[in-house]
Image (tube, rainbow, N blue to C red; front, side, top):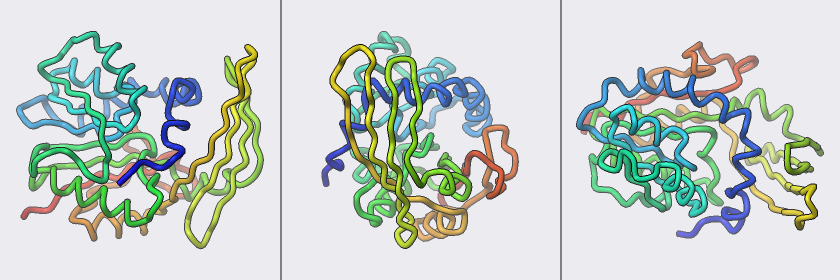
Length: 253
């Protein structure tokens, strides 16, 4: 298996600036994650697609035993630099492919996958591969939190040409939805103001509604316990919620 060609183009230093609104929500998200994970204990937590460690690092600081896995070498290098070697007994950061997790069965009591990091594979079967791997490495009765954008609401916005300004660059996007595949295709240009060469890349991501995601999770061994509309644990509402956060449990073997 290999990462999509656009992977290293999409995930890099610019990504953090693009996600600043999301980064501002990290503290609030951590409060909810503490409730979801329960008291720190012996069971390890998998932060799948951990990025630059904005959840993994503070959770380790709270006493959780965290393993962060991501495909971006840049993100992991930044996470290691920011950790400064702190919490080294409670934090591991690895580069890997979420479709083929490098862990033994039952390695984790809980897993989380934050901010729409699911559905990026080039093949729809990749989604099943990810969930089967998660089911394999989570202990029976362990929990899994999958945080996605609310595609029921967002798909109405992501269809057209958009321009937006950030501190260091302007972004021009052409977004196109393929309804028959529930696929969003994005062509993105970052136009830097300091004379740096523009950065162009394309990517695609599958969109899920509640029913399709629940079915996918259940077919791959997870019981859906709840669906939140945001990290305040409010009920998910397709026409209003910003997020679709699905809380699951692995069934007993």
